[in-house]
Image (cartoon, rainbow, N blue to C red):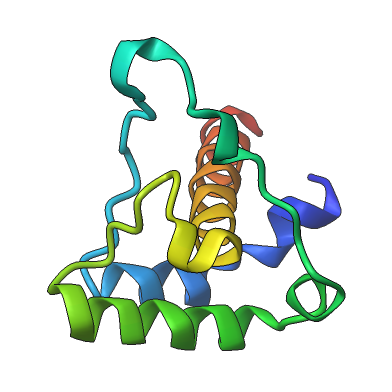
Length: 102
């Protein structure tokens, strides 16, 4: 497994599960095309935030909105939206590696 997959440990999966994180969310956009402002331009600070800092942001999102389903395109915090998408991608890789390695 690559370094990205190793970042998503069973402990982190359990933490996300504990807040009812949805792992299998289909990415969809009206008309099937992302809006032009969907590009994520990450700040230097955003790139260096730790997993726990992002998780804390996700907890704040859940407290405010009632769930942990950050929109794919969320102008209020594009970096959190991208981080959530990364967790889902890494989870798919993690479960594929787990099921297919013997």
